Amino acid sequence: TTSATDLDETTKQLDREYVFHSWSAQASLDPMVIAGGDGTVVWDHAGNRYLDFSSQLVNVNIGHQHPAVVRAIQEQAAVLSTIGPATANLTRGQAAERIVARAGAPFSKVFFTNGGADAIENAIRMARLHTGRDKVLSTYRSYHGNTGAAIVSTGDWRRIPNEYARGHVHFFGPYLYRSEFWSDSPEQESERALHHLERVIQSEGPSGIAAILLESVPGTAGILIPPPGYLAGVRALADKYGIVLILDEVMAGFGRTGRWFAFQGHDVVPDLIAFAKGVNSGYVPVGGVAISEEISATFDERVFPGGLTYSGHPLAAASIIGALDAMESEGIVDNARRVGADAIGPALAELQERHPLVGEVRGEGVFWAIELVADRATREPVAAGVIGQLKKELVTRGLLPFAADNRIHVVPPCVVTDDQVAQAMEIYDEALTAVERA
Ligand code: PLP
Image (cartoon, rainbow, N blue to C red; front, side, top):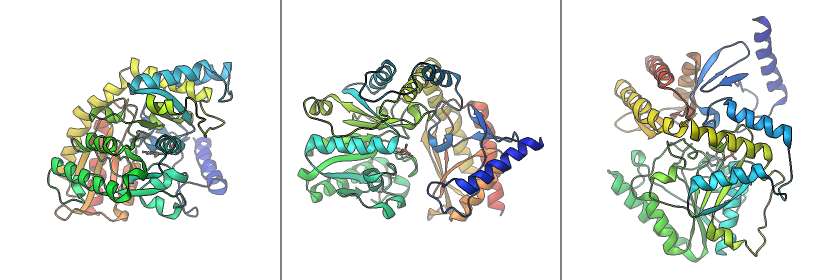
């Protein structure tokens, strides 16, 4: 209708005039208008519908507007909408208990934050105070958030204009398709990446290193599932040199890989887990750190010098309970695993066969990357313009994509159905054909 179309126009106009956007030069932005959603589908005011194969910022794991999560927030809002972090609150305690239960031993407590970046900040703070050491090692292919230590831990380009925190060192992790170590098998990549990491530890001075910080599965950097033995090898190095292992599960956690936590498939247990996104699918901003018993005990008699007004906010806590219980009772994590194995994986392999632009497809669960190359032999990434064009072709056909560098990430909510995957694959196929023709 005319009035609905007007609303879309008004939304764009207000956005252009008053809203300052993340990671962007502001002048020439043209964001999509999204007015509503349900499960894997979103729409604008005029009723144009899109399959959300981005899960927004890879955080809406339970899908849009899950009634159990909406209800949990509404009910908590009616009882107690806010309360300070120094109080004891039933909803907060129940949310923490659920997270600890899914993390398993040796995790015993949860420190709640407002999102992923401050989860990383506080995990780093805990590691530094626990060890009495300073340095933090993380990979170049990583994103850990946009605050002080988190953005300098980040390896990608976003670190460079923000390097104001000290004590950060970077190294290369495994990535067989573009190996830094001339490897030609996953085993070799794992072994050589571990050798490189140990040399970095030795060269930086082990007695000064507080933490190794890794995404269990690097997400925005390309969905780089660690080769067999890598994370267990990192754990062994951390133990050998008395270093705290922090795994960043902000993007990979809570169902994305088809497991509650991504690390649970890798024979490794970290000391600290940073989480956010999928814990409540972003219905209310929240994140946190799951803390091992040993590190938690460091602060039994000693003051933890950190806190936030909204730490353990009751609306966030209620949304966590609502989301985790629904994910459990509806088998949503199992669905992510099954859809990945039965539908997304095979369909992407077929896309790769049909399209010379596709250099590699990789992933698990609802966490997949299509890596686009100008030349399959040299693996030269496609130019940014090609990704821009592909995004347009996808949106035109009703799919909301997630793009990073030379890749499209196939990252729908964990509730995605086989039918929706089939629809999406047809769209990827047609869009790739259109781009290859041009
Ligand atoms: N860590 C990882 C792996 C992420 O993907 C992100 C966000 O994309 C963050 C941390 C930061 O989370 P937030 O944006 O909630 O601060």
